[in-house]
Length: 510
Image (cartoon, rainbow, N blue to C red; front, side):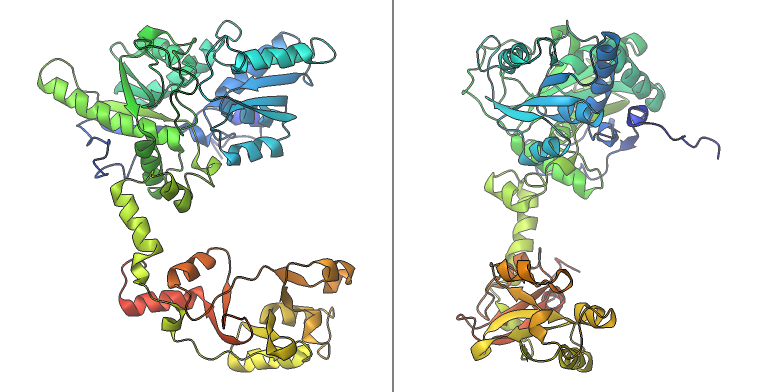
């Protein structure tokens, strides 16, 4: 097939990322996100590189330079940064010790560990250059301690004199110009080390005279342009991982950026969630860049009306980080609520989803039929017949004094019998799923009959439906008991909860 890419290695898939229109970024909350002006805002999806970030491009060129210098492929790389560059280097099969700030998410740290990082060192957020706590100071100490001497290399994109990344960003600039078909008016990107802003501004201005570069930084960060006093290492904190420094980045050419936009964590995270909902799985730094692009577009439109500035035909936003690296933060409603990062509109939506739609209803309001249970000593065959006759997908299992001890799924029981791993005459106790924290009994059982154990979550008729909904985020069925867990009173599934909402006429689901 003409135009179909051939089989290649991972490095060969880096770059040539798509550029798309950004849906769902209008009509946001007024909390810091300006309405879009007349420019067309599009996103360069750098998170679609194989390592899920723009740093794949940087890693590819650093590896080339290491090879050109004769550095052994097994050499230890001590890598400083929020973690994306380290992920990219690990993807390219390099041994790493990673120096990451305290604010780096646990999801990214787990990814680094799974990718084979030798070790991970947390560094102080906002540590200033020249101090012992700064990543460069720590990194050089680690390199000096490496054995044998010379077996480790310090890697930091901010050290422009060590790595020539001009060609890396020349390639990206060429893609941007080609994809915008000569209509590029402005580029908006988050600034961390300053390397991308510096090289992209030079490469784009050489191709598109008059193009404007908009730098994005957290509102809690230091002044990247260097106009203000340096921040102390504990003076300011922000959550957005891939943008912002507490001091002017050393690799940043001050003339590279035409306009600076500072974005709060709330605006960055809320916009990122809005992008995810619109199908663009970008992270918080990308959310900050899109919010800044909207602010810039309004400013450019206002200045154009004063005949001071021509409006940008196309505003390109670099979306350099992936939402998939933030499972426990950006993608967690609970975490976003706890850190007050939802704008007013999204806050209302989540509150409706979590609590308001149930209006203080409890499990009792589901009007569940009475549960039919089997005993541990009952034969498996009889339990299967009971479930088949009553169209049950599972049945609760009771132990001594009719106390609920577990349950038996119909599909599992049928599979075990049909495969010969269990007999119809066997007691239910041998194949059931048991509610207990102890696993000793399972360890001593034959492999094909090991009992699976489920952590018990008490659900009673008085349990709020909002809590039941949370239970169903990780479970398929709820067994309703009395508070003492002595009797099973009913069985509830997510379908029962959805039917209840439908009866109420809730618009949250329909």
